[in-house]
Amino acid sequence: MSIVHRSRRLRLPALAALLAAPAAAPAADLTVDAASDFVVEVTINGQPARLRVDPETPGFVIMNPDAIARLGIKPSLLPVVSRTGPVKLKGRTKVARIGLAGTSFERRLAWTERKAVDGADGLIGPEELPFDAVTFRWREGPSAASPVVLPLEFSNAWGLHHPYQDGGAVVRVQFSMVKPESLATASAGALLAASHGGRWTGEVASRMIEFDIQRPTRPMTLARPLLFDGFAIRGFRVRTGDHRGDYALPVDDDPDPNEIVVTATSPKRQKAVLVVTVGRERLSGCSRMTVRRKPRTVTLECPPDG
Image (cartoon, rainbow, N blue to C red; front, side):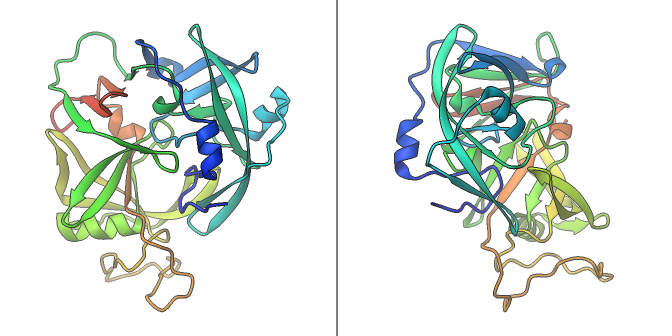
């Protein structure tokens, strides 16, 4: 059993990955839109279910436990373990047959005792869908924006992400249809604060990260935004207590006494995990976003710096 240092980053033994490996995709595209909350109607083992398509979802179909019970799915012997900061969740898995838009394919379901998503029975990533391209659409009609095309990488543990180079470090930049606000792990926040002039612009407040787990976060604004050919990330909420490693967050002249500070001598210091997640509020300014399988890319059609 492997442990992955982020919730919904669920990893199985090598055998499980082979059993659930995606089949070759047919030459077809799928479009999901904001009006449906990016949810598709599917069948799972012949029974109706609803899945939200989410690029941040790893290489499994992440289900709500009540949906698993309703569908009568019994777990296999292959478990998963997930972490959100210091919170550890044990989960179960099972391969099931999914029907969608005239196609049928097998994928491995994974679930914990906690709810994964509101408004649907589970989450599925574009990589797990049998389509050449998946488009997330916010507005109808042609886009006047110049498209921004970024390369993507994929792993079962992390799902799809753009590898952003910052000096000698690589930050995984992900795109979420679940998280309303953009988020950064503590190590990513510290790294980008140093390289892009980040400063605190608000107080510490809890936010739901995943699986109904609340963690302390604090807003940070970048003096020099992350720029991707016109698509800009000017700030995010930093998960101040999660995955800081040896990185140092900006000093606050008036620190919050409730903020968790991880020192270099702490025996429970978490490994640095450099991740920035672009939330729905930032993406909603775009007209559409398309994730393609070959080559793996994401195309953002957004107003300049909008």
